[in-house]
Amino acid sequence: MTPLTSNAISTLSQSSIYLPYRDGQLHLRQLLPAAADFSKTPILMLHGAMSNGRVFYSQSGRGLGCFLAKAGFVVYVLDTAGRGLSLPKINRDFTLGQGR
Figure 1 (cartoon, one colour):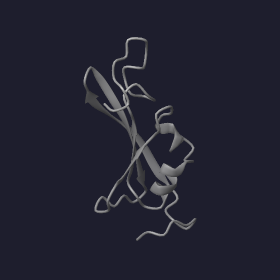
Figure 2: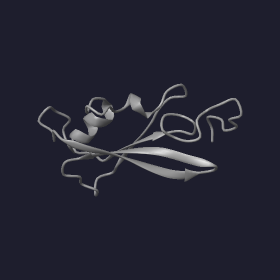
Figure 3: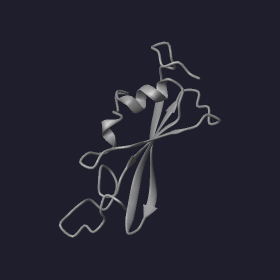
């Protein structure tokens, strides 16, 4: 098991993946350590009902998702329907609920 210490891998890369979903797309942020080991179990992070995936990462490398990626884990952060960078955005006619 990889220890979660300050001696862990210090760099990471971030990229966005867009997944087709109903009449729009879901945003999935991929956080990769410098030497990604895809044989390890990846981590999927989901935000709460009133937020988006940015609670787990930032461009500057802060947040729990970045911390875990720097520790050697491959991390994915999902923006649920209508949140964050997922499309379409929530509006008056938005029909998807939290369970979809």
